[in-house]
Image (cartoon, rainbow, N blue to C red; front, side, top):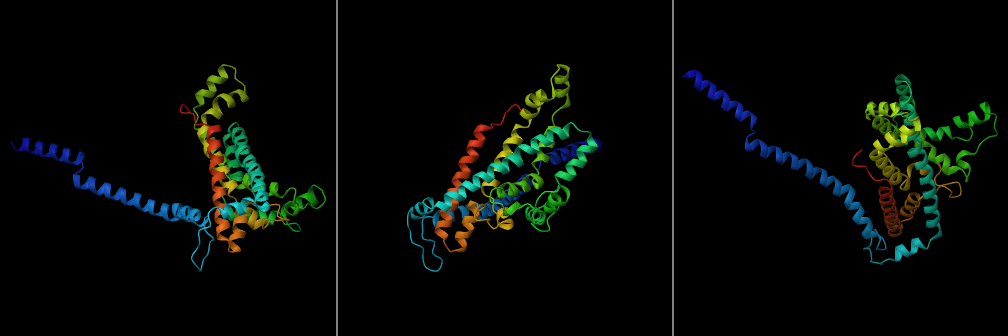
Length: 308
């Protein structure tokens, strides 16, 4: 009799252990909601509030000490009729095209070739090329590389390649190209590409080799379709970061020479420094709309394959 009762108690204990108590489930829900609420507070404080505040300020004269007055679309008319704004957008678009070309397409090609190399070579190349550095650190390093008198690039050009002294960042025609180079050197989407390529089952490539598929055929029919979601993500991030670039041109060139690297965000910064808050907010809103349209177009061009 005692044995059966003991077995019943053991079964009840197992059942109670398998089924969480209502109080424990309620506590888990409360903890989950607390984490969600904290994340929402941070998102509202540092995400949505600045966005809404900037839109509101763009329709005012942007006064600080005195109450701001509503001016309608006057700020938008003013900045859109400013030829310097058009020049800043042209510079930003050219810079974005160069940056996307170097940080988006080049890592794809590099990752595809790294995948074909021996594993040890791949690991060393990943370490040397995709060395993780913060944005400001890499920009300050490039500042030394580009120094016209004592820079590393100048030393290589004059002492090793025996070329005439190069202007680099002082050349208005090539300054945007030299500003876009850091993205290819220090931005590391190639790690994502390479990880995605390595996750593709080798049986796909083996079957393609049996059918006599060439290297490029395997890339177009297996590799690229399988990493399409990653390509779409990196393209989206590249467009956003390049259109909103500020730190690189600001630190390396201050928008020069002769305004040839004055991007939209540098112009916004200059407006804020001149206490033109209304114009700065309006220009930031226009840039936000341009970025939004560009990202929507990119999503339409590169659609994610649900079967990938």
